[in-house]
Length: 105
Image 1 (cartoon, rainbow, N blue to C red):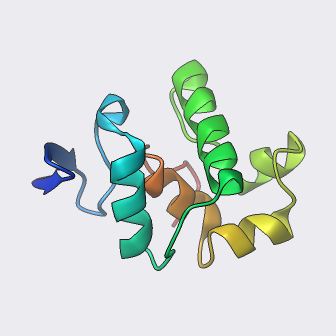
Image 2: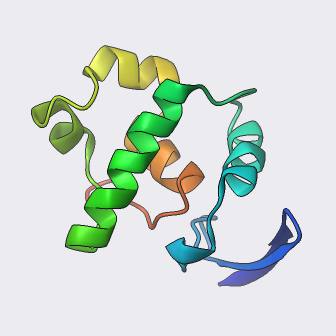
């Protein structure tokens, strides 16, 4: 585990860069993390996915997988890959301030 300052806050991160306390997250942190993940700007659609993921995390204690996002008709798989290229559930969870989804490598 490591500590890092992001958007003026001291944040605890796992070795893979996931936040350990999702309550510290805000949109300013999301924008910074997105840029680090190669996403230049977050759209309303990005936030729609991340807000759904955060709600699921609060209710179930884990970030939803791609399968669950698709099954619940949150976003089609193809669009999810366009929004969060290169491991969309993992990347979306990281930007949304959540832990790594179960089943992600």
